[in-house]
Length: 244
Ligand code: NUP
Image 1 (cartoon, rainbow, N blue to C red):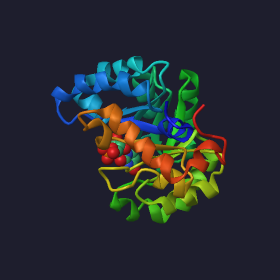
Image 2 (image 1 turned 135 degrees about the vertical axis):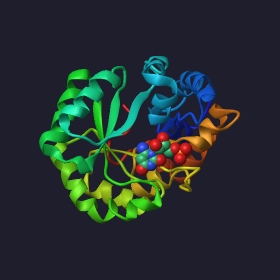
Image 3 (image 1 turned 135 degrees about the horizontal axis):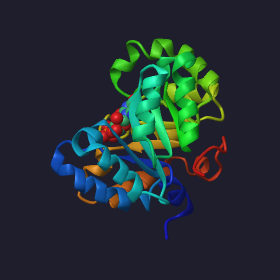
């Protein structure tokens, strides 16, 4: 059996399943079932939609049913009406959907949130991103984006595992909002940076796990690394808003 902290850590890791070519779609869908039984859940987005169609999105959600969080990452950024149409046709079966905070409340995110509420899905807002270009526009506007998030009251926000100091700022401003942090592995963030240093609830890992010949072992490896870094954070969540 896993030590308790490893068991907790693995339930803090969401696996991003992003096919690079059409031939990857079925392999990643098989992986959805595997990793959902072990980790915190899965995230699928535009690559899965583009290469596998809306059927592949729905199948990913179905395969993971009962096994963890199913996050739809289309990073919606449009007027409320269009985001509503997209959410109504694509987010069924998902537990959460990601949109950009910069869209704003009036006529935008307020409508998306209402739509997702009706579908039984939760809203997650991007307030900062994991790539270096986030420093150009998003990060100088972080306070404003956090103000939007305070107004919209989403279930979760996205903040970068590649810059744990940004995650910490987000945690300070939104003490009870779930933080999901991508950028671990392929983008340079170390497992545990976001959770242990920034106070994130979940780390999102894509290629480091999904690109491995043994994804379940890779996922466990990430969890062991996190657990070794901050076992106390995992066993006693400071925010109480971790996995439910
Ligand atoms: O800021 C973000 N950075 C990011 O990488 C917001 C995201 N949603 N993501 C997503 O996380 C990205 O779309 C991909 O699905 C995953 C990271 O994958 P990888 O770099 O670990 O392979």
